[in-house]
Length: 357
Image (cartoon, rainbow, N blue to C red; front, side, top):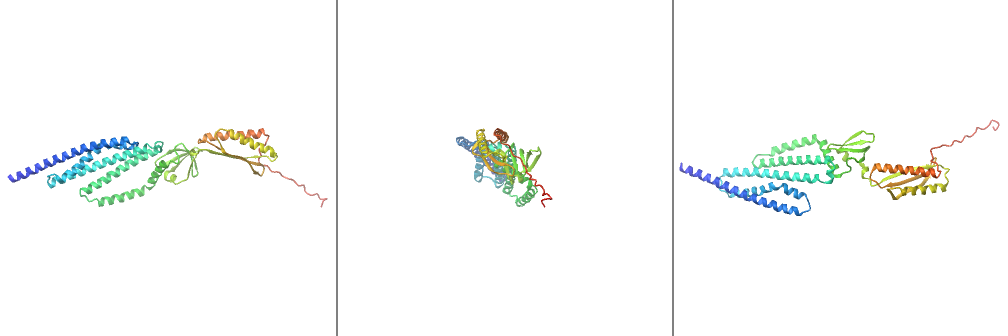
């Protein structure tokens, strides 16, 4: 009986001493973590980037715990613990380590999402912001699943069958939702590449109109006929698209036909007048202005006019083009040069008389 009491007393003392030493080591580690966070914060303030400041700020509490956990692992082998106490302590440290890793990984994901959301290509696109938020949630779910599998494996639980089941289930889900996943990646590529933005006038394949919304699954375009065309993002990412909003200048090209009765001198003077009037118009690119007599048409003398207006606004270009057309009409009227229209001359040959035969 006395020997049993002595053994129990030794075990109790071992538990008390071991717990005290382990607690002391973790307190020292926590102090080291606080000092480490202050040093990292000071270093982050000296850099020009902003993401590192946000990351250090969010890692303040996890960084205070990581050295404490490391100190616990280092002190555990040296503690006078019984095998049962050592196993319990190791299990507790395993759980704590897993939780800290998950916590830190979540902080990294949050900072990455905020950093990407503050980029210029994401601020103007609500669909991209939604996609980044959804991607952050998926990343956190994967972190939890991976950490859970790792923790179960550390505790001695067989996870091979679990991993195989997750792989088969993930494959089935991926096959069932491959169209949805393709559309999500299409939305991501549109958000990163930015071929157009909401409000831009675009031409996608045979569809031409104004982009109203870029969603996670599809993009909606309002056509000139006021119909709404919905295009899946996966198809849109693989289709040739043309954005008129990206134009730095618009081409004004037209061909006018004047009557064949126009004298050459009058036509030469008219060409010079048209070119001078166009060069005097605002926002005309003077380097590529062409006003030329190009040929003899079926019922007219053809004059080709080409000019570029330096503007990125489609509506402004329409107004400038209208003014250019009115100016050409006024110059033709002032020069007394008539516009030609399709005509046909019919020569009637009288039938031979009977006396001639």
